[in-house]
Image (cartoon, rainbow, N blue to C red; front, side, top):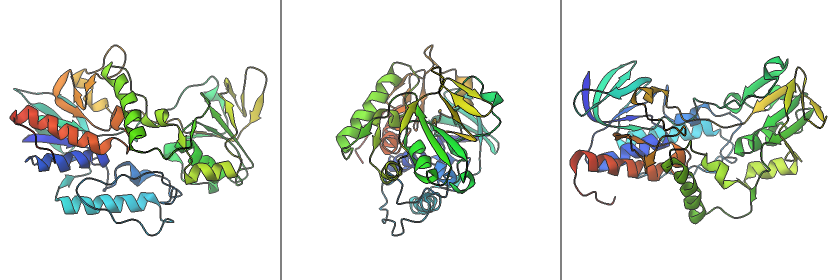
Length: 353
């Protein structure tokens, strides 16, 4: 077992932002990451998601990022390259691949972080494990009887494999728009279904709008409720992906079907769409199973927070959860988490970076 002032779990945007500000405040965090290399969840995106389609990459703090000149390169290559360069410039040694199995209350004033590569007794933990490893699959009657293929957006790797097939895409966010923008015209037929009518934004979604979106998610988190995603609050902007899907006529939305049959999806009014594939672009849930020993869940199913600090366990900061589970809030959350750790461990005034 090793001792550490701070352990950061996860080296995506939120984790690296936290590590940057912790170092600014005089700490030398131990950073653990389950990935085989830098890049966080970006490593696993579809190769068809090129940089000219990405609707937002927020620069990591403290290091200038040169604009990417070739928009045709996959984001799954460009962003990990950027993160790798950031780790080198920042001088943070990220230990990987290290998968954390559990975080529990240890002896004295420390949290015990148990991983497949060892144990750390930490005075504070910043958890930044994100959501990509927890794809959400909603249940609908008959799903187990469907003879075609079902996959989650996390497993989508481009349009070619859907040539000539009838494809149902479920979900109202940017992921669904990405799939539809690519498979429309390649699949023999596409159908877009969502639980709620989609909301399209025709503004530029500036800083004020971003703050408002984050605040709406924070309100639920403070109440101990499961957070909505920030994307669910923001609606769909007219990004290159959305414009492409609209131009192909692929965003003609129908309400959710009521049942899945062996070869179709059906509605209560008798409508039916014969399908070969169902793609569930239905989002993700926070990857927090390793925190189960701390018993943080409220009766409402969420984790009650004050900013990034868990109220039931002040030694734990959650970033990449709730309002910081997107590029909009991750950098701000990293700074806030580092400030909270400094207050906890030193009770000293926190300078503004």
